Length: 163
Length: 266
Image (cartoon, rainbow over all chains, first blue to last red; front, top):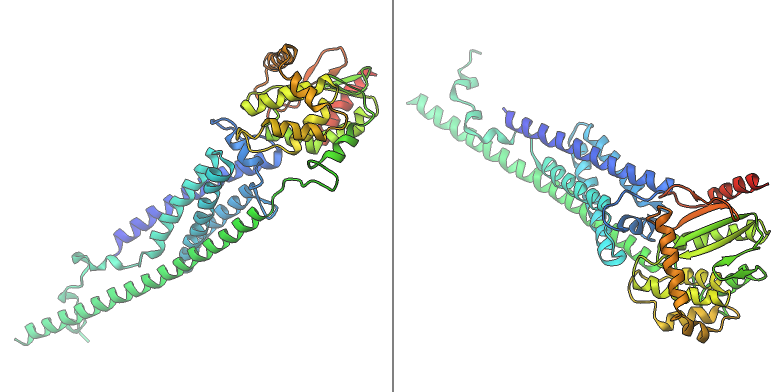
C-alpha cells in the first residue's frame, strides 16, 4: 500500500530541500553583501543598490536578507524532522515567508520603485516552497488505499483463517 | 448461501470502514487547513504591523529652529573657516588630494556625504592635510543635471561644498522632478553667504556646462562606471582609484587610505 503516496512524498520532500537550499544561497549572498558593504551583482540599473540602500532594507534594525536566511535554514531543518507537526511547521513557516515576500515585493514596486532580481528570485522560491509544503502537509498517509488494487480481498478474511 | 451473505456483510463492513476512513481523512485535512489558514492570518497581521511601523517613522531629517531646511546649521558650521575655491575645499597646499565623482541623486553618494565626509573634513581637511575636489557627474537623470548646474554655480561663489552637503541631506525621490527652481532656491538660501539669485542666473554660463562635461569625461577615463568613485594621491602627483568598485566608503577605510598617502608624501 501507499507506494504512490510514498513516491509523491519523496518527490515533494526532495523538491523542498532543493528549493530551501536555493533560498539559503540567495539569502546568504545578500546578507554577505549587506555586511561587507558591497553592491549586489545586478543586471537592471541600480535596482538592487537602491533596494538595499532604502530604509526598508531593515526590519527593527535586522537586515531583511538575514531574516530570510534564518527562515530558509529553519525550513530546511524542519524538512529533516519526522512527523506531522514538522510537516505543518514547514508549511506554516513557508506561508509566513510567503506573506513577508508579498510585502517586500510590493514595497519594491510601489515605495522604492526599483526591482532587485535577487529579492524577486527569493520571493519566487519562497512561494514555491509554500505551495509544495502546503500540499505535503495536507496529504494524509494511506489515502491512496481507495485505489482498487489496494482493497482487501475476501481471501484475506480473518474469519477464514484457522483459529 | 451463508457464504454469499457473509461476503456481502464483509463488503458492507469494508465499505463502511472505508467511508469512515475517508471521512476521518477529510476531517484531519480540514483541521490542518484551519491551522495553516490561522498561520496565514497571523502572518498577514504581523506583516501589517511591520508595514505600519516602518511607514510611520520617516528617516528624513527635520529642520531645527531657525533653519530653512534640515542640516543647515551643521553644514555651515562644518565648512566655516576652511578655504574653498570652485570645486575644491581645503588648504591649496595640502599634501594629499581626494577627488570625488558623485551624482547628486545617488543614494550611496548621499550616504558618503552624510556619514563619512564630515569625519574626513574634521580629521584631515580642517587640519590642512587634505584638500577635496568634487567632480559632479549627472548620469541618473534630469534632476541630477539641474542639481549639478546649481552646485557648480554655487562653486563660482566658493560655496559648492555647503550646497552639495545640504542637497544630499534633502535628497528626494530619484527622477521624480523634485529638483525644481523652488527646491534649488530653498537649498541656496540655507547656504550662508550665497547670492542665490546670482547663482540661479549663472547656471546658464558656458563655463558651468564645460566643467560638468570635463568631470564626466574624467570619470569615464578613470574607468569608473558607478558613484561615488574616488581618486586619491599626492597633490599634483599621480592619482589612483581609492577603494575597489562596489566597496562602500567608511570613515575607517577612507582614513586608512589617506593616512597611507600622507605617510608616502612625507
